[in-house]
Length: 117
Length: 117
DNA sequence: TTTGGTCATCGTAGAACGACGATAGGCCCG
DNA sequence: CGGGCCTATCGTCGTTCTACGATGACCAAA
Image (cartoon, rainbow over all chains, first blue to last red; front, side, top):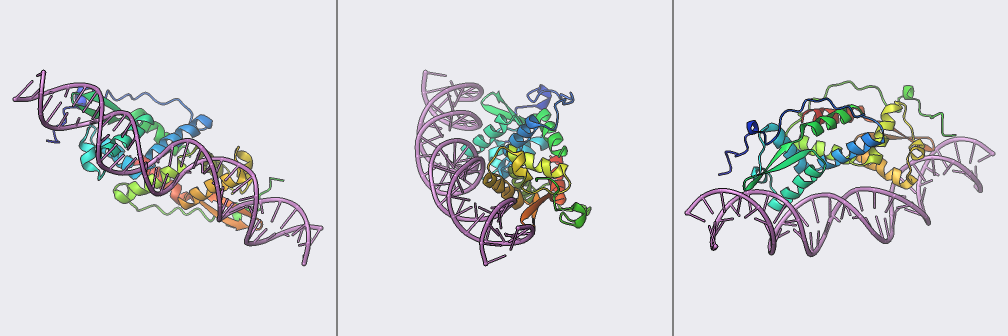
């Protein structure tokens, strides 16, 4: 049974919306480093697919990601770690599985930084 | 004399505007690969700075880029090659120097792909 | 034609990436 | 408590990145 995620978004696993605007600049050395780090995290097709998956299902999925990708579980776990280290994704332990979801604040920042080019 | 670039944008070194809209999809496997490749190309602070430089000066610069970065000339040349291979940047030989400029079509596509997340 | 300036490429060395199998840790159900 | 499922981490191997100096190609001016 890979369906019926036990992680209901209404339950707060992925937290509320967090609509606060980002005040950080979109230029300068720090912005450059941020953009480079975020772009590097996205710089792999598998990670792009993972991000898209998490954006689509606003509900957070867990190991369903493994089923969606033609990669070994350990490899997917590493890609998730890269995304998590970059801040793009958050993981929360939910019983026996782990629940991943997008960090909307960081995704918005990425869009702002790319848009600022 | 690192000023007075011999490459005047009005002369066509960087080509005209090319405002044709991009009809390619922003989702799917091909879009994922495109986004991953473009993001990977941007996934280094030096390359982010180079792209920003080229966007700022709509005129194309050449080895002035080397002066702006704390890197050896060969290293900058390699970064430029990465950006060129990704399609983000175009280089044209202009006398003894080489003239780089942004490929606006590709930059627009990157923005569309990131925006489509 | 020779010289000087500009840029690309080569070669190299260390670090990081990407993939996998194997292993270890946690939680739930019996 | 013990087995079973899910996930993270470890160890490994081959590939790619990043940086540099050195070398080579090219054009323009002398």
